[in-house]
Image (cartoon, rainbow, N blue to C red):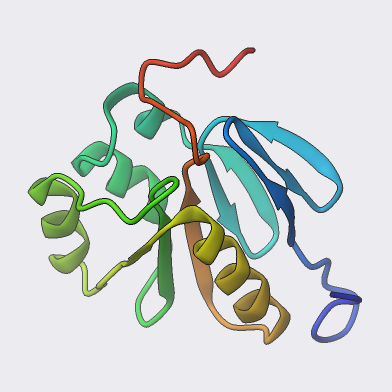
Length: 134
């Protein structure tokens, strides 16, 4: 993928992913992350509690419908805690749950198209008790 979809806007892209983290726009990130159109941040609430309401709240932050919400749940698609889905649905979102590899590829396509999208990505070998500093 080359270049931003329009103008000078930098494209946040997933260059690689693995059992402990991601390479995003050439920089390595350990642990769960949240991707926004122009930023990547640590998904700390997931690291502490897994896919529960707190993780949903932090993922959405100030993101508004009708945007697309991707959730990469690890090596395979995982059904989250009911509070996770309830939190999203109460705010007008239906998150797309998929394996992390699929979520990374989907992010890159949607970001390249300039779509309104946000993603919560969990490394394929991650468990909520892992230390994000390693």
